[in-house]
Image 1: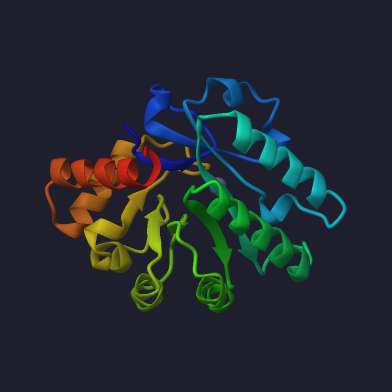
Image 2: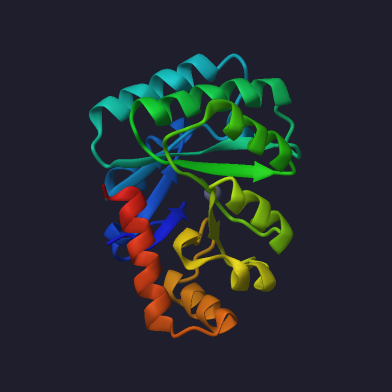
Length: 213
Ligand SMILES: [Zn+2]
């Protein structure tokens, strides 16, 4: 059922998309229209003062709304103005929720892959961690795959990398783009020199296993 594992816009068939939100999105119409939700604390929209409030909002959503199929996006971003310490504090709290509620974690990561790998080793999560919007080179993809990360790619993907990711760790997303997810899957299939239908089926399978359990 699920194909687009990270979007901020709902497609015509909402059941095919995991709509990503944080506290500031709670009054948007998409919040009630979404079939599947991933809820998190985005490092861009975070201060040390509102962290407790955001965590309380997230926990109450997790305990009351069965549409929540993942936690995120949440993570670390070295290019944003939020102090890195605050980002780490929020991210660790979110990791705790992902473990407690047994939901996979959708990770936003910008220029902090060493820190991210270190945190995964330190926390030894039982839940899957998915790096969303992955645009890195295949060498970085390889190190992340070795640590058990899943990689989700959007329209700005690195072709060499998309070719190299093993199919069982690959996911697709539209994020902020209004592009049809199937158009993206077609491009990915071309790059991977793989039949479109087979890749599509594989992506449905991967997303279903991770999020529709
Ligand atoms: Zn996003």
